[in-house]
Each structure stands twice: as structure tokens, then as C-alpha cells.
Length: 461
Image 1: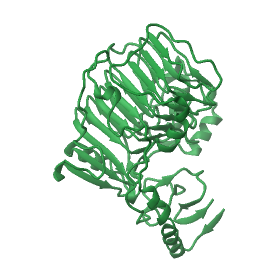
Image 2: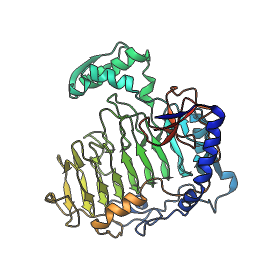
Image 3: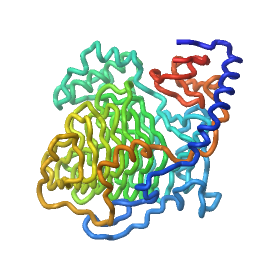
Image 4: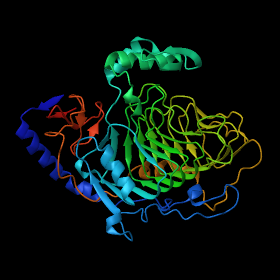
């Protein structure tokens, strides 16, 4: 590992590197998209019935493309990173504007705890220039080593095996109980505020569009913590071209009478920062969820590195899985219908996975012949044939790997070049000193290879 220690030399080298990057980054600014990408809301988010075609006009804040057109300028706000906690700034922007643009050219957006948004309607959250929203707290290697030393991975996760924490809170599961007590002992955080390390919690909202944002969490850890994104009772909303990495509890959960939502062209993954509970997408939080809700479309998404379960796991709703890509090699089953759910599964490509599918008490599951399951037999359907009320076209499953690998995630709207490296002089005080940053000042995992900034030094790994 080579270090460049002279502070001025670091800046000079970065300027040269950014100049040399100008041509390839300009090429990326063309924002190529797949021919299979409709670039507009589709699926269940455009409906108001699970059985008959009853269109709903989902508009978000009036525009979901960049540059923004057709929306009054006083209803649009563009945010850039300050390098500090921006929870209040982001919350105020979403509550007071229709279209909120997150411009990543100045580095990561940092939030100290989950931003709760209640009863909103008609909002667009749009990322440009590789915008990332990251949690402040994350599970350090020191914490993970302590959990290993205590044998937490081998502990029970069943209810009734836990105990009472030193702060007086009761925890029903052994692994969670010991994890939380160890973190209390190590950090002194008796309020356990770290458990609220998520990004957005939308409660009872409607007509929300979230596009082209990267969500980066603290690492999955078994503490009954926050999700990166949560739709609680939220309806007729579209999440498109987003990346979800290292959610504490889930990457993106949809629960409690949420309904008519579409998740498209998104990626879900975990890094080595994640420890346990890499359960990425939960639809319905318990078997007692009210029936008739949670109808959801998943289209052209990628479940990749270190996803272990819930891709998705769903209760009650009608779930349309169309042209999704699975390459997760660890963990349990990928697609998991549960209590009273109905699944239509078509055009998906699953390769290298441990188990494609398991179900418990589902009402109906339809597996079409146009699914690739890596030499394993396509699972048997059960119950009546599942149908959805909207029109759609299924792509051949064989095109899914290339299309999704190339175009899924926050791949849109790279408009400008990086102009400032905030990490050298303005590393956020909330971060540990050994944090690593890329050349545009965004925090990266400590295992990332290439040229990074650490402790105000340029390092070549």
C-alpha cells in the first residue's frame, strides 16, 4: 500500500486525476437506458384495484425526469452535501417542495437518523450525479469482532430465548439480546439511538416517486433496527433506478396497509460491513396484516452480493415478479410467498442461488415457463392462476442478466463533473478517523481497491 503524505501533493495529484477522468465521465453522461425500460411509472403503482384495470395517475411532484420541466421554480429545490448531518435540511425540503433534487457532485448526503415523513402526497425525490444518502453510524469491525467472540452467530433467533437488557428493555430473541447488550457495553449508548440508523420512513403517504438515489446503511445487524427505506401505509408510489446497500434491518420494507407500489430497476446488496439478518425486502410485517393490501410490482431488479433472504418475502398482497435477476449465492430462499399472498413469477433469471423459492401458507403462486432457475426444476405452481389488472410485456428471461447488470441501479442523470474534494479538508466530525473516501469526497468501504483518501492522505490500495 503506497501513501502520498504531502498535503499539497495530494491536492495536485487529485486535480490531475480528475482531469484525466474527464473524457470517460463525459461519455457516461449520455445516460444510456435499456430498451426494456419504460422510463415512466408502470405496474401496480398505476392502479387502484388488484383485480380490475382501474388506472391511477401517478405524477409525484409533477415531474420525475431531469432537467425538471413543467413545475414552478418555487416548488423545486436542489440540495448538495454540506459534509455534515443533513437530516433536518432534507426533511424540510421534502415537506415544503414538490420536487427535491439531490445533487451528488459535492459528496455524500449524511443523515444521523431516519427521516420520518407523514401523510405527504405528490413528491418526487430525484438523484443526479451519483447522489448517495448515507447513515452516520455503522457497525465497525471492532463491534463485529466482539459479536464473533461472544458467539452471536450461533445463538438462537427464536422468540422466548432472550432477556432483559441493562437499560431495562426486554428482548425476546437470544441473538438480538446479546447483540444489543454488547453494543451498549461498548458504546455506552443506553438509549440505543444507533438503532434508528435508516434513511426514509414514509407513513401514510401517496403519489411518491423516488428515482436514481443510492441508499447506504450501517450494515445489517440483528437489533430490530431501521430500514433504509420503509413504506408504512404508503400507496401508489414508484421507486425506480435506486441502489440499496447495507440496511440495518431491511433494505426496503413495505408494510401496514401499504398498497399499489412498484419497485423497478433497483439493486439490493450487502457488503462485508453486514453481519447478520441480510433480509432485504419484507412485504407485510406479520401474519395478521389486513387482507386486500400490499399489492406490489417488482420489475428488472437485481438481488446481488450477500443477500440472504426476503427477495421478497411477502404476506397478504398480490406480488408480480417480472424480469428480475438473482445472483446471491448465500443464505436461504430468494422468493418467499407467505400467509395469504398471491405471486405471479415470470421472466426472472436466478443463477448460483442456494434456493430459488419456498412458500408457507400462500393462497396462490403461478410460475410461468419463462423463468431460468440454473438447471433446477422450475417450482410447481399452486392454487388458481394469478393475474394482474394492468397491461405489460414480459421480456425473455435470457436477456435479463445483461440488461439488469448494465442498467439497474442509480445509473441516470450524470450531468456534471466532480469539482471539489471535500474529504481532504472537511472530513465530517461524526466519522471515525480511519474512514475512506473516493475522489469526489464520498465515503467508501474500507476494502475498496484503487485510489482513496484516508486520514487526509491519498492511498493507493
